[in-house]
Image (tube, helix red, strand yellow):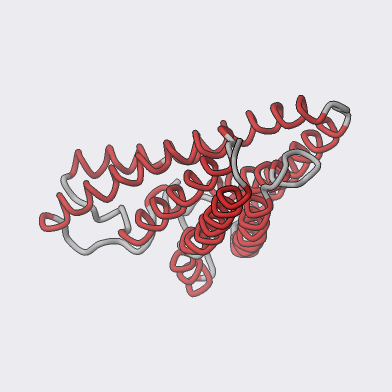
Length: 235
């Protein structure tokens, strides 16, 4: 049986990891800003794709819902970080729609409505599950799968780096923010005993280490390092 003092210590460390994860996530949320400065400056979305923001919004909404007391216990920091993330993604999507050509405007509006509709179905459907454990497992698997697929997306960039022996399209601070955020929430999930948090973030931590290792290995052979992530920037 865990003593009260040990429980309080674990709670403090868990909360510290959650706060750190929220802080480091901010680096991820602001990473598209250089891209949108260019879009606003040129008044055009050019060849940039809006799909990453659509996907990130759905991921944030599902994960934010998972962290609420109606789905899981004592996961407030999961809700806060993903709520802030959702606000950022909606802002980016709005700016993208504003400067996109007519065809892309309609497409992005359709995808945004699809996002919100899917989340509404997930939210209402999960509320119809009267058993909290079943609801927790159902949303937990959805949020975990969404996080794993999001963390797996840099595999494309990793492939580009290895093939070109250049880190031009792998911004250092984006990779560092991913690693620090994933590690923080991996520890948070461990201390909270929640596999739906520590498993996907453990995978994210490993991929973050790989990205940082590749950056330092290839940085001397690269040209100017891009400030715009490849996955976010290109169609």
